[in-house]
Structure formats: structure tokens, C-alpha cells
Image 1 (tube, helix red, strand yellow):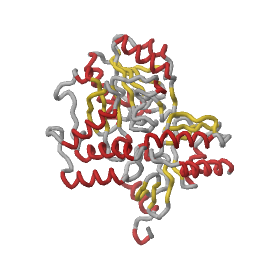
Image 2 (cartoon, rainbow, N blue to C red; image 1 turned 90 degrees about the vertical axis):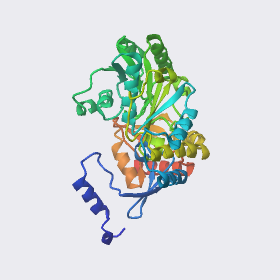
Image 3 (cartoon, helix red, strand yellow; image 1 turned 135 degrees about the horizontal axis):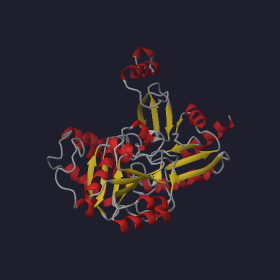
Image 4 (cartoon, rainbow, N blue to C red; image 1 turned 180 degrees about the horizontal axis):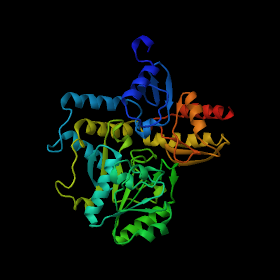
Length: 397
């Protein structure tokens, strides 16, 4: 773009700042289009996107199969609510359930991750008749009232005051901490299997196994917030059922982020036992399950399958870990698949900026020493090599 177009970086930034409420501190980029793992700006520059817009661009930017499905659905019917049946909704629900662990047989569609978590907690309370929810230090579950009250990370609960009552905190990875608060008032235990925003923190497989046993013993609903870990990011469709979590399957999984390849959509997957307690009008959503979103969900899942992206995450993820061994300043590599945290001995923010100067987008976290990588699942080995070489160069500077 040229200044005559009226869409220079300075012009766009000035108009956004003037008319939009402040949210995040923005990168100095005007995103115009994307293709795969590449983001293109309005001035013709391109960036290697290893962050995916908060882990949303799972299939890559503007995947042709997803774009085509959205276009075809838009030409037929943009939207109608859950008051009618929809083939698009039926296909999305059937496809998603078919990929889930066997015990999770019903889907509820909504609009976002925080909404999925709110509904998961509500369903747990309905199923048990209890009120309290246990969540963990370092966990992040969203910004709406109940979800932010379940978030014990940084100052988010302060932002959300007055908090919704009925939220108890335990220490992530410490089963005795959980046992000490898991009394007969507790409806559910909810956790991110990998705490992304906290710096990509994991618990041991034994912790997940012990948590499942505890929930079974005390008739507590176990909820996995897989808003970030779900839909292939770890190299499996879900963290639930994987080896890193001792093959544990929860009673509810919540999803969003990459589920619609950028179209806003969230979901809860639940067992028959949970579903049996949910009656008509117990849950509701105007836009949840809309046709455009449902077309995007089905096409997203198909694209991941058709392109072999799960295998790609495992193969390229292993290559990335191997290459990172060359960088002595990387103290450790946390996480699974394409949800990785690179720990440095000092603050990661200057490294984030140095990489951005080299046209590579990464993410920071609440742990100031950890740089997060959440790339599209189609990232290739040569793009990993480009990143590692740029990281090495940035650290030399």
C-alpha cells in the first residue's frame, strides 16, 4: 500500500487507537492476508507466524478447504439458531464426536473458550447438585464472570472482581493440595492439561491418573480445558487419552481456538452421564451452532486429517526440539507438539522483539523467562530451520 491509499501503517494504527478500546499492546503490523504459516502486511512484508493469533490458526491461515466450505455455506444460509435442525450442525457434531475419546458422546456448541468453560462448570453443578469448582494456580480459563473467577493467574481475578463465589484453588501438579479442598461441596475439578499462559507448565502423568481416581472416588466431575491443547496442537486430537496424561479421559472437554480455523466457535464434549442431567432450556446460545461456524468446524477437522497434520506436528515438533539443542541460551523446552515454551535464563521479551524485527512472530507468557510457540499445524522443517537460525542470530546480538 502507498500513502495515497490511506491505509499506511500509521493511518490504520491511528484509526484503531482512536475508535477502539485498548486491549493488547499491539505489534507494529497491519495484517492484510495470510497463507499457511505466513502473515502478509499491507506494505508487502511477510512474517513467519509461530503464534497463530493466540493459537487459533491451526490449519494455517486461510486454508483453501476451510475457505471453500465457508464460502459454500455462506451462499446457502448464513445463520439460523438451534430452534431448527441443521445438516451443517449435525455433520460438525458427528465429526467432532467421532474424533473424541469414546466416552465423550455429546457436543454442545457455543462461541468461545470462556463460554465453553462457563457451560462446563454449569453442567457439572447441574449433574452433581454441588456448587464449588476447584481450579489451579497458573490456570487461565477466560474473561467472563465465572471463568475469570476460576482463573488463578496473575491479576486476572482482580480484573474480574467482584468474583463469582464457589471457586477453590489448588496447586497444579500437587495431588495432596487437591485432596485437601476436594470435599463434598465440590462439583468439578477443572484444569488446563498444559498451562499455556503460565509459561507452558505440565504436571506428571501420575498427577492426571491420581486426579481421575480422586474424582471417581468422590463423584466429582473432571473437566479438561483443552481450548489450547485440543484439535491437534499436541500431536493428538486431544490431550485427553494421550500418554503424557496417563491416557486419562475427563468427563467434559472444552474447546475453542483452532476449532474453526479463525471463525469464532467453542464446544463442550460430554459423557452420557453428564448429558443425562441436561434438559431443554438448561443451556442456550443465540449464535452457538450457527451454520458458518459449523461448516468451519467440519472443514477444519477434515483439513487436519487430509493433510496429515497430526503426524506433521509430531515429526516437525521433534525436529524443532532437536534444533533447539544447538541454542545454549535455551535452558529448557516445555510442552508438547506445537504448544512449546522456550525457557531462557533471563527475560524473553527482548528476544520476542528481536525475532519480530527479523519478521518472526512468537508469544510471551506470564513467566517472563518463557517464549511461547503456537504455530499452525502445517509448519514445515525448513520453516523451523529459518526460525532457529534467526533465534541464534538474535541471541548473538
